[in-house]
Image (cartoon, rainbow, N blue to C red):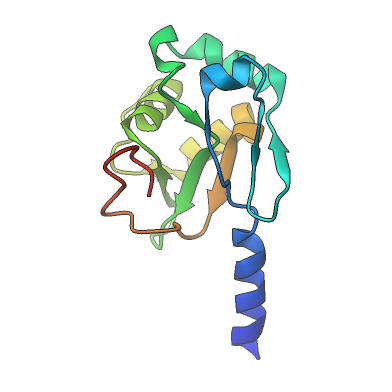
Length: 139
């Protein structure tokens, strides 16, 4: 019975995973939402988009895709960013530290505090974290 409850809960959580990503520039130009599994739209807050654009260099606007997807690892207090080198660079700039290997719970709290509509947090990646898609860096 526990397995069935867990399975239903996991399917529900995955149903809100983004089906698409948009660049920061696209979001600033009006495509300020993404579709999530289940067909719902997730809208980004304008003030958070503006804040992100002010904190990232202009050259990253066409490269960084949102929403940021943060994955909780099996290690206590450890998270990783599911994305390309550009999302890693953006989050590193926002946190003012290199996050190539992992993020702490404090890092995640800071990002959520400042950009809650631009972040999805999941318990497991949809795919393999060790071998990303060569074309776009997403797993």
